[in-house]
Length: 109
Length: 109
DNA sequence: TCAATATTTCATTAATATTTGAAATATGGA
DNA sequence: TCCATATTTCAAATATTAATGAAATATTGA
Image (cartoon, rainbow over all chains, first blue to last red; front, side, top):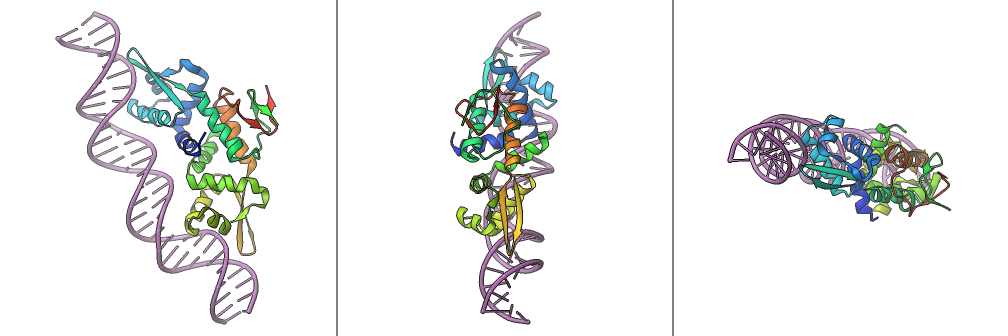
């Protein structure tokens, strides 16, 4: 992933509400959650949420699809993985201490 | 690492110059680099650099020490690892796709 | 002590991001 | 069609962050 996209993603995640949105959506996988439920869960206004969702979507961290009158948002795990890979490999060149980490299925040097 | 510290770190890294500072410092390990050399390498003004360095230091991503008339900055790899671990485990619950990733030495499920 | 170097601090300005609430748009059901 | 629901858009007000350059501080060496 190119640095400019990583930068956008970091900026998108560097906000309380938005990081919560990601945390809420990741475990739901591709099913995602509609805007209304996200707003209710996180107790934010509809318009405020819409603003934050669009930041995340523009950064490429979320996808959205329309289903009847709802708009469903889902985390893009490949994008998230791209950001993490960048931090680990291209930014920190394996120098970060992630020994406490439980990896899903990564190659080990 | 607590979410509020992760948030600070993400905000600190979500800036072009600051991400470059981290990328420059990580490979130098604890030796670090003095402010002047960082400024020269990245072609930023001394005062501008000072501003960015303090953001990174306040976020806990850098340490600084004084050596004669220089101030030497070094990346805090444990802090970087903490951010990455958070994204991988507490935020994304192992759901991120990091299969392209080469991990230094992490446990694999 | 004086001058040079290294870095930070400060005030100012400029640029961006966020919040808020009202209005607009779109969809589905009675 | 009309109404209720779901979501986005927009403009205005605030708040936060960043860039700039001059001045302050500290350290070393002549």
